[in-house]
Length: 186
Image 1 (cartoon, one colour):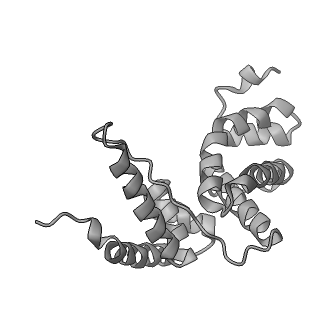
Image 2 (cartoon, helix red, strand yellow; image 1 turned 90 degrees about the vertical axis):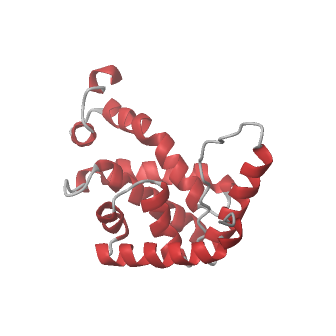
């Protein structure tokens, strides 16, 4: 089979085909999810230079653990968790004391000529995100920035949905205080 033969397959079907010995099925899965998983890795890693190695570790883990995938979540959620774990493992191995998540806001610039304002805003938000506790930062990254549901984020992190809701609420409250200077007076 050629990789094009798998293009119409669902992610779960691709994973099953890979487990059943179709080498190209995993390649299609990687191509399908690489950009999003790379974005997650860049936001998770403290040092962007470590991202390619963390991604390679993650894809190798996913390749090896494919047979252990339980269909109780989406393949993308499963991959997301593998990427986060690979990033944390790499940070631990390089002796980074705490995992820092850098949330880069991908907003569209309303006025393309006002790039300085966009950069200033991104820097302010990045600094505020870095001041949040890791658990709150990760919950906000998954729910508010990556767009996962609370239930998906809870499954990825292995915590209850109420825990994710609480972490997001507390993190958003802290962000509102940290970013209050960005508000324009009424």
